[in-house]
Image 1 (cartoon, rainbow, N blue to C red):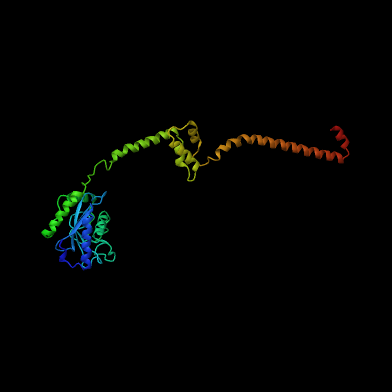
Image 2 (tube, helix red, strand yellow; image 1 turned 90 degrees about the vertical axis):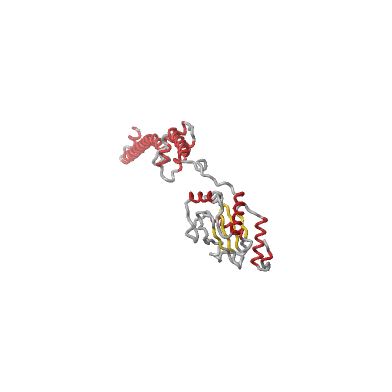
Length: 308
C-alpha cells in the first residue's frame, strides 16, 4: 500500500493505516479485512459463521465504508454473500453502524465491528433495516453454498481482493457440520430409555403397592406420607418392614392419630370398671354415714354400734 498517496497528518488516514498494520500483524481465523489500494476508506472483509449455529462453516463477504470523520463517526456495513440473516448489497442497521451514530465510540475499530457483526448473526432480527429471518435449514444450505465461490462485486481490483480474502478464509474455516442422527437423537432412540425408567418405576410399585397411591392422594403438607413413599420408591429392594410400614399408611392424612386408637380401645373398659367400683364404694360410705347419724339422733346408737 502506497502510504505516500495520503496525508499522514489526517487523523482518519493515520488511524486507518494503524488499523491495517494491526490487522496484518495480528490475524484472526474468524475474520479478515483489508482496504482497497486506491481507497483506504473502503474495506473488503469476510467473516466466519459463528460456531454451534446454522451459520457455522459459512464464509460471508462484505464491504465496509469508513467516513471521512472516522473514527469519530461510525462506518457502514454491507453483506455481499447470501446468508439468510442480512440482505445483500444493502446497508444493514446495527448499533455499530452509521444507522446509530449515537452508540458509536471512537475507541472502536474495524476489528471490533467485525467481532460484533459475528455476534449479531444468530440474533433475532426484530424487523431491523436490512435484516432477514430465514429458516435454519435455509441458512445451513446458504452456509454450504457460501464456500463454493466468492461473490462478484465491483471493479476488478475489488474482485481480486475478494478472491484473495476468500482463499484465506477457506484455508482457515472448518468444514460445515452435517446434521446427523448422532447429534440429534430421534424419538425412537429416546423411547426405550423412557420405557426402562417406566419399567423400573413399575417394579417399585409392585414392591410397595400402597405407597405410591398414598403419595399421590396425600394432601399438600403431609410430609410423612411423601417421605415414606419416596423411600420405598427409591429403594429397589425394600425390606418387608419398610413395605409393611408403607401399606399401613392411609391416604386420608391421619397417620398420626390412627396408631393411638387401638390403645384407647383396650384401656377404655378398664377405666369404666374402676369408675364404677369407686362410685359404688362412695355411695355405700354415704349411706352408712347417713344411717349412723339417723340412729344416733333417735337413741338407737348403742344398738347400731352393738349390731355393727
